[in-house]
Length: 99
Image 1 (spheres, rainbow, N blue to C red):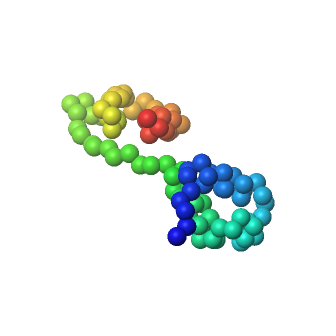
Image 2: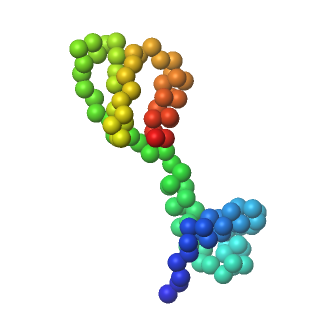
Image 3: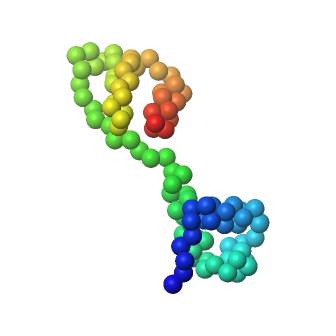
């Protein structure tokens, strides 16, 4: 049975692979690791890098036409009007999702 690599070892392998400029088969042959293992590590890293979606709950407020509230998973609440430019709203969402 193959031994488990630590997260640091996996990251080092991926960094070396990317810097080598070699194809997957050649790199795996030189390192003595199965091609499927490298593919798994690359796929897992790609999935971790994807932005995650945040669950939202829509509610109505007394003056819902003029305001909104964004409630984060940790309980923080951001309230404001809809006077956002597209770029500002996108930035707010990026910052909120990063928390």
